[in-house]
Every structure is written in structure tokens, then in C-alpha cells.
Length: 271
Image 1 (tube, rainbow, N blue to C red):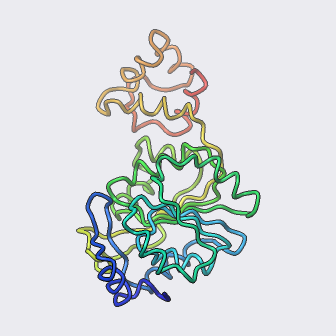
Image 2: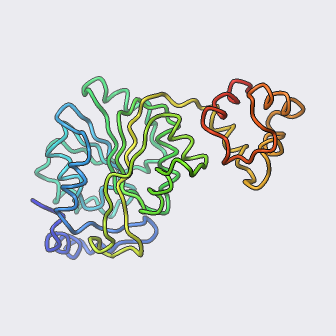
């Protein structure tokens, strides 16, 4: 089927296969072809790119990605969508649909395999809002050789993750591997059913490999945000905490959100 994202085509497929969006999987179907084409235009994909998509739904974004990319691999957790995707993407010969929870995927391994055939690997997806942070953390900490990521998330989340003054474990993880940006905003009115909030495209260009030790330091440092960095890190560095913070030139009285990524990277050396 051509132009799945047109409202009439989307409704036809949903009604034919008796598919209703479920809260369980955080489903909201995009019903504006123009918006989907703008999303694809935000991504630097070409015939030398393998795109990994998370949650294709009924294939609206998948279809448009297939026209630009060399190959598209989509991971879908909802097995109800098998028949509808077989029909909607029947003409997209460079698309593979894998019915698996993306959070269980060995991303480093599969990206390494795709890099044997394609110059670039990018992730493009309309992420379920309820699991956005888990998916982003899974991608970043995987150490996979990804070139870029372009995902639709809640506008509020995208604003936080691209605000240099806002620091959380996730924003610091992102900063440790590359640069993030908010590329476009998307009205809630182009979805069915319409979510209660607007969305945005969050992009990350990967420049460095993630250090897994950083996760341990960040999780410990942000255990209680109102406590000082010294108090939070005592469970990790024990009686060496003051000595290590001094060696890193970090004020013991600072709170976790006051530290920069460079401070946390220094701390990883002491694990």
C-alpha cells in the first residue's frame, strides 16, 4: 500500500484487521504523510544507511524510510500487527520486521553485522512515551557503533534532554557520547488516537563510545538529588570518597546536578 500515513489508508488498515491502539504498548498512529516525510528529511540517511526502527506500528514511517535507506530493520513487540504489516509493507522489499522486544536486542552485535554491508547505521523511531528513557539508555549504553539517532518523544522530554542547564543521568550519558538537538516539533493533532501532549524529534549524533563505568557512577551520584555528591558517593567509594573528590577537584558540598560530564568522567577512573 502506498502512503500508509494518509488518514483514509490508516483507518482502512486498522478497521480491516480490527486493530485498536493499546495503552500497554503506548500506541499512537501518525496520520499525516507530510509530517512523516518531514521527519525522514531530518535524518541523514541514504542508500548506504541501514535504519533500525523501533515500533513500526502499521508501517507509516517504515514505508517512507524504505524509500531513502538501503535497508530498514524494524523491531515490533505487538504480534497483533503481523498481518497488517505483511499487507502494508508488501511492496517495500528492503524492509525486515522482527517481532521482538527491542530492549532484549543485543544492539552492539547486530549493528556490527549491519556495518559489514552498510556504511552507516541510524536509529529512527516514534518511541512509546512510557518507555522512552529505558530505550534511550539501552541504545546509549549498548556501545553499538551507531552513527545517529532520530526519535520522536514528548516535546517536554526533548526540551529537557537538549537543555545544557538540565542535568540528569540520561542527559549526561547522552553528552558523554555525542551531541543532541531538537529538530522539529509535532502537534498532537496528527495522531490517532491523539496523545495529550505535543511531540518533538530528538536527534543524537554519536561521536564517542560509551564508558559503561559511567552508569555506575551516575546512578549512585543521583540516588538522592537533594543530598551532596559526597553523601551520595559514599556508598560507592566508601572511606576514599573525600580523597577521590578532592583529587578530581570536585567540591564535596555540590549536588549531583551541579557537576559536569567531565567531573563524572574523572570519577570513573577511580572505580
